Length: 151
Image 1 (cartoon, rainbow, N blue to C red):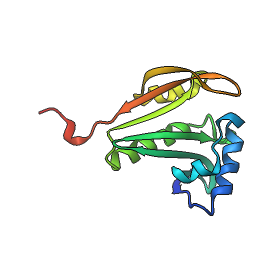
Image 2 (image 1 turned 45 degrees about the vertical axis):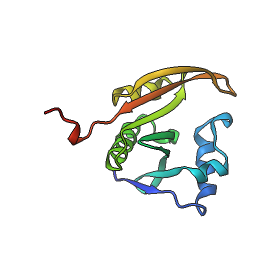
Image 3 (image 1 turned 180 degrees about the vertical axis):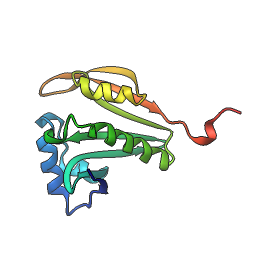
Image 4 (image 1 turned 90 degrees about the horizontal axis):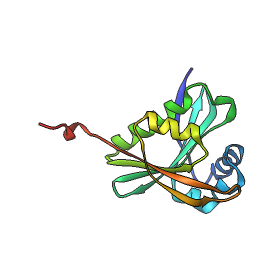
């Protein structure tokens, strides 16, 4: 299996990005065109096919994971863990001190995946999501860098 990450080229790939979003998320969780233009988005290709996508917002020393998704045929194959590993490596490489993300409280798979990588739950926010209504869990991972090792 060959996996590759490529930065989304905007504006030319905006329609493909929005179509991809529609295939993964309920209507209430999809981003509009203006939002996609404000974030840094990346495709995950598996054997030459678009399998996943993620988007980031740079917030000082925090990299906020706006979205992370895999198409259903690629789920359950360990690719979510690979995508999460790539996000963490990306953040470290670019000097971020922390990663943060919101996810639906009902999204047990994403919460468990984040926890496997050391994310902790910071707080729950009632009524964050609509259609269907759900609370959000804010999760955070503090990144350690080589120069953080105690002497």
